[in-house]
Structure formats: C-alpha cells, structure tokens
Length: 236
Image (cartoon, rainbow, N blue to C red):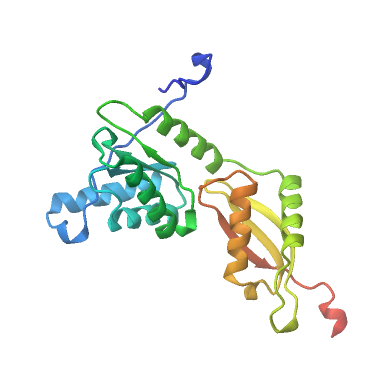
C-alpha cells in the first residue's frame, strides 16, 4: 500500500500496489547457466503480465544496449514504461550522466520519446516517491479512454492542419477515428486508400495523440482500416 506524500489527505491517496522484482537480464553471451536462463524467462513473463514496467539502470554503468533491447520489448508488448537510474547517491558527474542517458533514450527509443526518467537511490530512498507517482500516472494513462467527441475534434483538427498526401494524384481520405480499447490505448482510423498512407504521416498522428490527448510516453497503437465506397456500384 502506498501513501502519496504530496496529498494533504493521505487516507484518500492509499492505493494497493503489487510489485514483482525480477532478476536482472544479462547480456546473451553471459547467459550460460540454466538458472540464469530461467531468470530471463521469468523477467519476460513478468513484462508480459505487467501494467507498468520500471526498468532499473545502474548509475555506475549508464545505459547499455541490453537496456534498450529490454525497453523495446516492453514497448512492443504494449506496457507502460518508466526508467529509473539507481545508485544515484554515488553517481559521478550526475548532471552529465542524466543528460547523456536522456539523449540516448530519445535516440534509441524513438518510438516512445519522453519516457519518464527518474534518478533514485535504494540506499537513501531518494526519488522513490517520484517514481511511484510517475508509475501511477503512466498506469492511469495506459488505462484511459478518450470520449468520442474529444477524439474526433482532435482528429479533424490534425487532418486539417496537415492533410494526408495524394500519391499518384489520388487523394487519401481519412474519414473518422475510434478508440478500440485501452491497456494499451488502441485507435482505429477508417478511410479510403489507407494502405498507401506513408509511415511518416502515421507517426504524425501517433505523436499528436500522445501529445494532445495526454497519453505522454505510454505506448499507443494506431491501426488503419479501409472503408468501402458506397458509390462504387453506381459508377459501374
């Protein structure tokens, strides 16, 4: 059970928390013993069933390639992600370290720019309340739904501000958007010739959903579905 220290009435801020602490996932070349292989499998299963994953880095090692691979797996599984840098109490050149990890994350995890990055210390307790607050905020966004009216107002404005391209001189028509589900938030856009919509335009819409509809760094799914032309039969 966690009490939010920033809330004036702590009894209203009590929320149950289930924490699963997994063994570290070592680099593949070092995973040789059967027990270590089982630990990696347990960590992957924990990710698959988690709501929010906190990827813990070591301040003495910084961000390693294996960390990015784990983060990418979390995103691909559609889980909310937070990255914490542990041992901050003994970190050297802390400001440069933090900025370096932030930059590396934005470059190496481009599909989820702005993922929360929090400095913590298991020894002193620094940053733990901030980490839990971020985890609850991420979970709420991961579990949220956008009202149909708000969603379609946003969609119309986004398409008007930057209309889809017209490959071969034929216009791509995006008609409407719906939220199919949450956990993770999944949206479906209906339109004509959507199979020719460039990936860059799809990213434009995804980034807009995260930014304008308050999903932050939560993984968002965006699917495209073709609608039939009701006048096609009359033309033939």
